[in-house]
Structure formats: C-alpha cells, structure tokens
Image 1 (cartoon, rainbow, N blue to C red):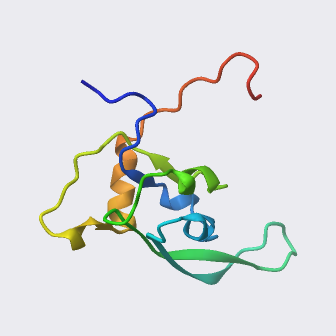
Image 2 (cartoon, rainbow, N blue to C red; image 1 turned 180 degrees about the vertical axis):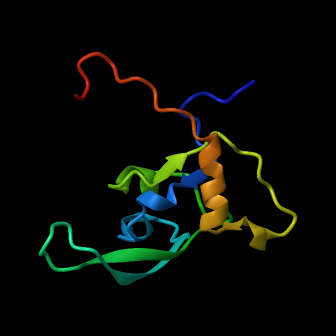
Length: 124
C-alpha cells in the first residue's frame, strides 16, 4: 500500500532551483544540512546592464543519521528546491552511507508526487 500523499519520507533536492541561500541549513535544528557554494558572474539581465553575481551550488548534503524529519527545511525554502518524497526504505549497513549528496538527493526527485490541486479559492 502506498503511503499517504503527505507522508514524510526522504527529502529530495531540485538542484536547479537551489541558490545556496543557506536558509534551510540555518533553520535546521539538527544541523544536518551541509551546503557549500561560490559566486560566479552571470550575463546581465538586459542589454547594456552589468554582469550579475549568482551563487553556484558546489555541495548540498543531508545527513539522514541526524535528520529528525521535522520538515522545517522544506517549509523555509523560498525557491522550491526541497520536497518530501514518500520513499522511506533507504537503510544502509554503514551509518556513513546515510549522508546523501546532491546527486543522491536529486535522484529522489523522481519519486516526489505531483502537488495536489489547490482547494477552491486558495491562491491564484
């Protein structure tokens, strides 16, 4: 039987949406999210404008040996980069293998269900 639509399994990362703003890491009560990034130049938004500096994500790890699945990181992310996946069977023989990097967290995105329709009158 499939878990309920709002079940909390593993947290998945949509890497393209992450700006390395660190909000999730700073909000985590368990300090189990590790982020590293660097700034790089991006083209100007308009012709004649100056180049912009944008954050580039180098490392995004979640240590599931420490995570208590509170979901604060998913809630505080302003860029829709973190999602709940219903997958919950990912035990490991070695505790060190519970540290999932951005590649592994990205794989979990395949299991994230579509968002349910909003109730009538909610949002535009």
